[in-house]
Length: 101
Image 1 (cartoon, rainbow, N blue to C red):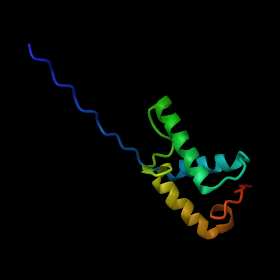
Image 2 (image 1 turned 180 degrees about the vertical axis):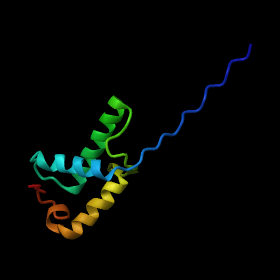
Image 3 (image 1 turned 60 degrees about the vertical axis):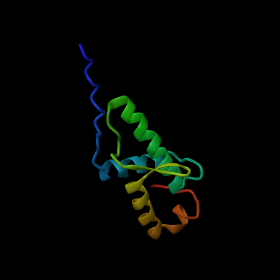
C-alpha cells in the first residue's frame, strides 16, 4: 500500500490590530526602560508577538515581520513609529528616552 503524501503546511495570516499595537507600545513605554528607541520598541514587539504566538496560537499585534540585517522588524509598527517621529523627533530618532504619561 503506497504512503499518503503529507499535506503542505497552511499559511496563516493575521490582521494588524491598531488598538493592540497602541496598547503594546504604551505598555512598553510605561515600563521605564532605559534608552527606549523605535528600534528597541520594534524588537520588543517581535519578542512579545513571538511569545504570544507560541503560547496562545496568535500574535498580539498581527503585524507582518520583515527580515532585515539586524533582525525582524514589524512593518506596520515601523511605519507608525516613523510617522510618530515626525511629531516627536527627539524621542524617536535621536535615541532619547520615550516617556508616556
